[in-house]
Length: 214
Image (cartoon, rainbow, N blue to C red; front, top):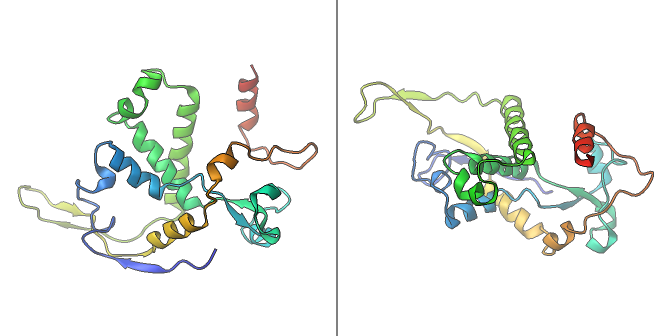
């Protein structure tokens, strides 16, 4: 991936500037328009080509990284399947938004009633912990001040902080321009692990697999 530029954000329309603005689209009640806005920034299912050397530079074992099927048309020197963590974390935040008690009925009520499946609970718990790890790893030390606010008698936290940020619009446009147009079809026919190929079994996965086999 080419280098992503940084931008200084402190304008009326930016997420950082509108941190305290309840009218921001990402804070509005569920609707098709709100879902479209979230879907655009939370494209966690995108799969992109990556070289074995880039896999190694990321601290991963290239032998464990899955190669895309030849039919997908990835370049021979970039055959590894790659996702982007920023989109995964936003996907997680979107999942938690949908799981809020105030939003649950809109997204899941007709499907699950008051008894959501264990897989949904596990997914939300996974998302909570992924976001926890990210926030603790990238702890933001920017200070915020307390201001007087009309109609309130106590100091009010001002979360409108000037930040130097990744140009996220650039990242979204890159992802959209590099995403496989046949991605949805190909995900349904994703590669199956060949016999005797190396694999990584994460802690806890074996117990989940055992439950699935019951």
